[in-house]
Figure 1 (cartoon, rainbow, N blue to C red):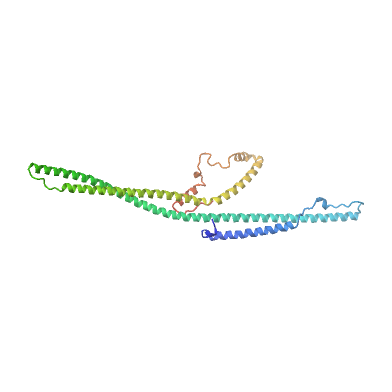
Figure 2 (figure 1 turned 60 degrees about the vertical axis):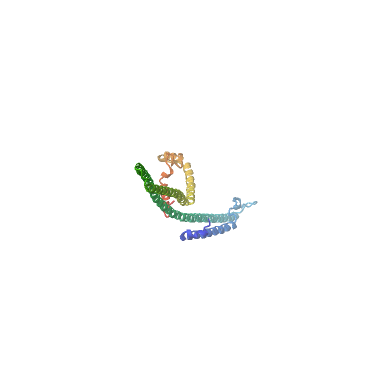
Length: 332
């Protein structure tokens, strides 16, 4: 991801801090390089022990010569000590510069990780806000379809009742027509013109047509309702993924901090192991038990990660992000 094209997602103050840290890191690097060049140019300040004491060979030295030689040796020893002292001071200064440069470099790395985290988080939050807005539309559409499905089912039941009533009305009309025709035949008259049966048959067909239409309408609405429900579930899964992705932007920074803490803990633990044999009696047993126990003990009694006190705020934050793209994350 190109951070230059995404500076709009970075707080100006954080970008300023990073720029300042980069400049400081460059300055400490230049100072360190200059100091190392100066130190190297002076050569090896160490002197061989044999090179300090110069003993003249041959004739026995006079007292005056002995004093002169002792004075020269003393001066060379003082000069040697002074050069060693200066070299020690320069080495300490060089060490301080290296430490300062390392600190500046680590600060740049921390700020760069924070810039990357902020860019990734804000992009994910922007996407999450759009997904939450979209799911609101889907929920509104599903609510509308719920109401429509209820009306369709009600109308279908009414249409089915109307069909039953029309069938009963037709049966009554047919029976009445039969009675009328039978009476006319008994009296020797032609059967009368009776339109009740035709009207009843027509009413039944209309009722059946309405029932078929309401059944088709209910099926169509049901199909749309099912599609909306599947879309809603898919959107909810997408929102859950985005919420977890936002929480995941804290991982690089958290990982770097945990690794650094682990390295420091491991170093201190080794020292504790070395010194534990010399521990006072009042604490020696407790120290031994601590060193014998696993470093990470959570879960040994069946606990889940979600139950750890440090994890609870993160679980709540991820849940809150599913409905609010601006929900805050806990501090690492």
